[in-house]
Length: 564
Image 1 (tube, rainbow, N blue to C red):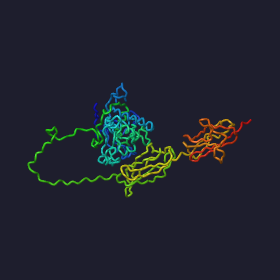
Image 2: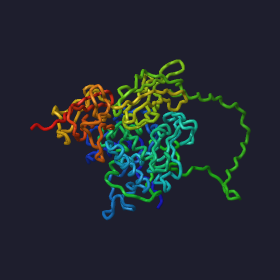
Image 3: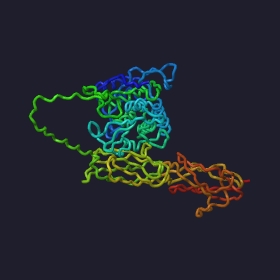
Image 4: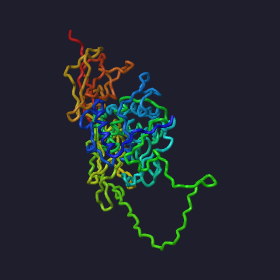
C-alpha cells in the first residue's frame, strides 16, 4: 500500500485560525488534559507560556508540520479493536505498527518511573505526527531505526535560531551548525542529556523511535509536571517547541488520537504535506515535488541536450560588470562571545539524605572583558557515585542565562547514597573551561530520642517483658525518618560495653543477642524494638539506643521476682 499524503491543505493565517477552532471544539469534550477553559482553548493572539524560554527547547524551535486532523472523529470498524492491526478507519487515524508500539512502551515505562506525570501515549503520537509525520509514515526497520535520516533545517540563523555545532556532527552530520534529528526532532545538545535507550540495545540513538519516544516522554515529564493538568500540559508542549500555533496543533492531534486510532503496517502511514516554514527550511527527507526543467531536445544517446542559442546579429558594446558588495559576516551569537564561566555566588552544597538542597547552583557566562552574556545555554551535569538528582529526577539540566548572564540550576534532591559528588557547569555550543561544584550528602540524623510511653519496663526472672520499647527520633524538632540506630544492653551508665547477663533479645534463630545494629526509624520517626526477655538474674539493667547524629536514650529495665 503506497503512503498517502495528507489531503487537507492549511496555510498561513488559516492554519492558526483552524487550529484554534479545532482545539476549541475538541476541548468541549472535556477530555483529560484539555479543558473548556481559556488555557485549554488557545487562539491566534495567545502568548507562549512565560516560564518557557524560546532558546531552550527540545527541537530548537525548528519548523514542524501544520496539517490538522480531520474534523470528524476516527471511525474504526465496530468489529475490530481500535488498536488492532489493520482496523478500518480514517487514514489519518492510522499509526504505523512499530511507531505505535514505541509510544505505548514509553507510556508504560514512564508510568513506572514517573507515575505522577500521567503521560498519555497519545501525546507522544501527537508530537510525533507534528514533528516527523510518525517517522515519515513509519519508514523504520524492525528495530525502530529510521531507514533514512530525518533532519530538520540547518539552524544557521537564516529564518531560524542560530545554534552552532554541539556534537561534532555525530548525530546530524553537520560540524558547523546543529539540526534537529530523528522522528521526535531533538537537537543534539538536548539529546546529549535527555537521550534514552528505549529498545534495550545499549545505545541512545535519536534516529530510533523507541529511544526517541522514551526520551520525549522523560523530557515532557521533567520539572515534576503533571500532564493531566491542563496548565502543566501546556508548559510541557511549549517547552518542546515554543510556539502557540505548535501548541494548538499538537493539542488537536492529541484529542483526535484519544478518540480512537488503529494500527497500520510500517511504511504505509499518512504523510503530512504542510510545514510552518512553507517547506523552505530544507528538512531532509521531506515531501518533494517534480523539479521544473528547461525545455530540451532528445540527444542520440537517449539523454537530453539544451538548444544551442543563436549568436546575436551585432556584438553589443562591452560594459564592466556591476560592482557588488560582499555580504557582511553574520554577527556572533551570544554563545560565541562567551570566554569563561564564573561562579555566581553559590553557597555550601550540603544536604541530608532524602532532603532537597537548600542552596542552588548558579553560574555566570562572561566575555573576555568580564561582561555578562545573556541568552546562553548552560548545562549542569551531576557526576560521581551518587543517586542525587535535580528536581524532576534528571541528572542533567540545561538552563538559559538571564539578563545578568546567570543560569541557576534546578534544586538538587539528595538520594540515599551518602558522600561527595560534583556538579559540572559547561556552556552548550562553546568550548570553554567548565566549573565544578563540590556537594555532599550526609546520613540522615537525629538529635533527640524519646520513649512514646512512660510505662515501667519490668519482668520476672526467666520470662519476657510485657511491653516493647518504642522511641521517636527528631532532628531540630522535626520527625527524623530513615535514621540509622543501634540498641545495646550495656553494663553501666559509664560503661557502654555489652552486658553479659540480664535482659536480652533473640535473633532469627532464637539465640541470645544483646546488641541490635542496622536499625532504622520509620517515616514517622518511630523505632519499635523486638521483644525483650529476662534470664534468671535479678537486678536493674540499662538499654542504650543511639542514632546517627548523636541522639542517645538510656532506658531502665528491672528484673525482680513477683511479690508474694
